[in-house]
Length: 271
Length: 226
Ligand code: SF4
Ligand code: SF4
Image (cartoon, rainbow over all chains, first blue to last red; front, side, top):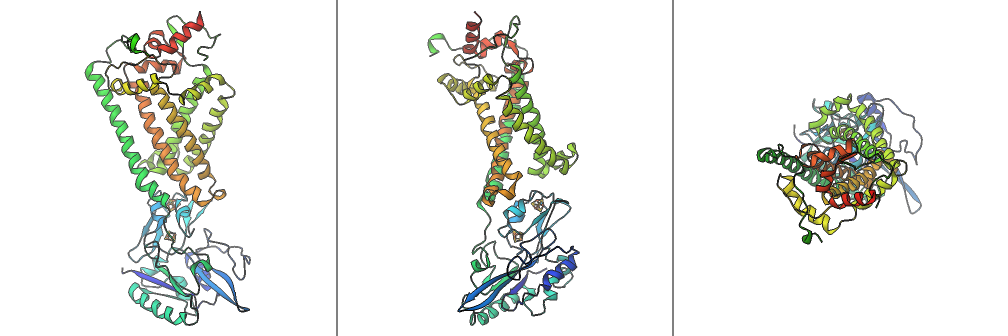
């Protein structure tokens, strides 16, 4: 299936949270007790049962307040840190660009959660499985849009083939920039691009997002340097042991009386 | 340097190499190390995932790994204060003190490792090679314990620290397993040095062995016995 893209248009979002409810509905997730964390934001972050929620930042300019609202979920990165970090090959990427966790393979180690630059995956402590937005791959693969996109009334979410969506995004951005000069298309930089892209009305930092999300260097150090070298060194040590045993056997050292030799250098050499 | 527990019984032709406390520390370390390795390896490498089944699966392994981590740390640290502390501290100190004789031992050692005959100056209680093994064990343990502690409680540490703890934990494991392979070979399979195993099992080694491999230490013990 061709590469897909979802555009989250921040200028159209009304903060109704229908996407969040639709996600729960489609994915059969239990509701959770919410509270007003800040402004109209009702979730502090992702949980094993909440894959998407809306963040609210209040921005004051010339005595006017306007909201910076963002529907948050897994970005479905082109080069996902979570995938590289996974201990169990439980994470994979579909051709359409969605990043999915195989619940049967996941052992809940939480490495994905630790390395995701957006802290998306959450490990359910009771089932020991990592959960996050699935991109509704089951719907996508049957030519439906993800559940959140399907429900969005103001048209803040749209979904389609990558190239077509990029054209839409550019056009919308030019439009939005007239009113919000700081507006930008987020999801271009870092992680080799993401499947969910945003028209943000302000700089990423105003939304609490990293400018250039990236995979932590320690993950490369771990998976690309320490691990392969460690394997080689251990293999070398094992080979040395085998060689030692073979050489000793060939030389007949196992038949000899073990301490017939004294190892001392001659007295004058000793000091 | 205390070389021999003054009140330990004499055994003819043998010499006391490791006190009860030293042996206890060693074997607690051995058992917990193997449990930790086997319960951890399956997380590190999917190839070893079936190994976790020995213990009853991932979830049991997860618990055992933590239980034995605590044993590994608590029991061994306690030994430095409870059972023959003097000998433990001496070992620790000696691992960080390399003499010229130790260096010469290390240079000559590869030959002996592969079945040759090497000449080196008289060695103390711990030879140069043994000191290296001790050093890897001590530093490896320190790194693996610290990083493991951070990994156990990721919520309370900064993200960046937790992210660094993972590769450090792996690196320490690789170091320790590599040293362990050499250690096992010398203790179990090497025609000459495997005699030393007796010292770790029963405490005593043949005097001839001590003379051949730890002459400096042997003479000290004899000196004290006079
Ligand atoms: S946002 Fe995080 S969880 Fe989602 S694909 Fe990217 S790295 Fe993985
Ligand atoms: S928690 Fe699951 S999905 Fe995440 S890294 Fe561990 S095994 Fe992989």
